Length: 116
Image 1 (cartoon, rainbow, N blue to C red):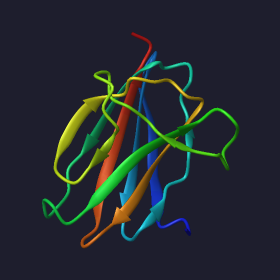
Image 2 (image 1 turned 45 degrees about the horizontal axis):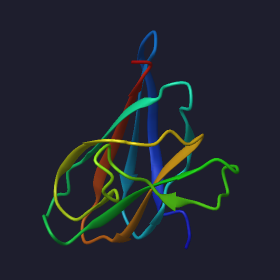
Image 3 (image 1 turned 90 degrees about the vertical axis):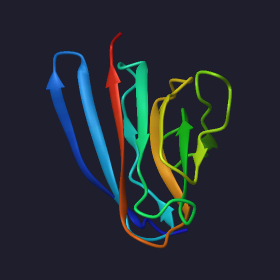
Image 4 (image 1 turned 180 degrees about the horizontal axis):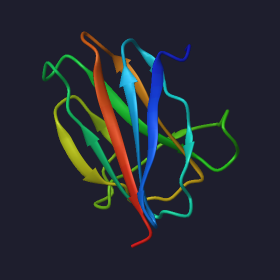
């Protein structure tokens, strides 16, 4: 899979808080970010057309090229979404990236991390 998900920005909002946004235009995976020092993370997914897009949040401790594994929510459910979602990430890998398996229209995903 090619990189079809571009990292829009990483914004440091205040001491101990950062936000990253990816723009998804086609199937593929996004540029990984490293937020291990911000263990409390919230993932926000808002597709333009519900049910026609699928995005998975993945993590790896091995390096930016992986291998990657699907992360879980704080409730232990796989972070794979086809409809709008705002979920707490239950794990804290060194690298995090989104992977889009179905895309019908461009959309953004965001992750906010803080020290807690």
